[in-house]
Image 1 (tube, one colour):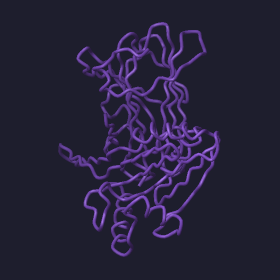
Image 2 (cartoon, chains in turn purple, yellow):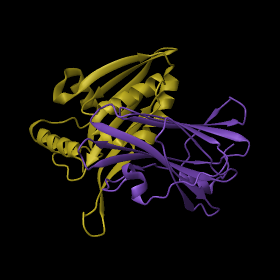
Image 3 (cartoon, one colour):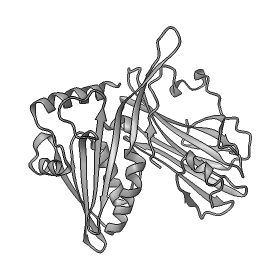
Image 4 (tube, chains in turn orange, brown):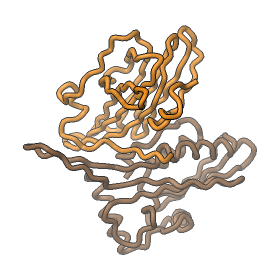
Length: 163
Length: 169
């Protein structure tokens, strides 16, 4: 299936305003099983970049239920995400030039099926205009992580578990 | 539409009126070799077998270089918003036993001049084996250094990130 990625439109109130935007913060009450490491470098003192991700639950009809946004202010963030069900993560990189009101953004979206008894790592990087998100899975207590390939939402119809 | 993109569109339009910009990958290569119409040739050799490099190109090109850029504006007072698509990126990949070609084109609304069907060529990268474990990549490019940076990372395997589409043009 052809993949088209859409950049976030320029908005006046955007991710940089965080809590003022009306976007609910993810209610992080579950046991921490997703460990996010974030490295951001816009490459210019005149440009700032931020990263965050939205958590969606996916129901049997492959419809999304928005659970909230996690802001990646720190280099390391631990989050609890639901297990044994399909989750859709939507990572957002937003950048803005100094004194400009225009905000640019790009997204990395993927389905995952977090399993109980497993830990997940996400490396979220933006380095001088090159971005990447790598998600890995390992059995709890093990350091033998395997990379989870990016899966579009369209795959929801085909399978609901990644083995 | 951001200011940089507007400048790129305007300059490309003006250039296309005065200079014949490359219309095909072959013309891009010729321009890169001679340094005409702002194209440059950059070559790298990577310590990776050619099949691996080709596989990485095949995976990353559609993932990273196929996109549409949209812009939304909202009034300071009042409600509503307007969203429009203003640019597209399109990769083309051709892989043979001994060569992999990766082309990248960009298309904008209201383009003027003689434009190839999927937009202006910004990059043509040719990868071919030098030996069992070594591959050479010739990159002919103009005005898209981020794409070149990403392609070099894919070729070496050291950086599989995508160029931020909003910063490419």
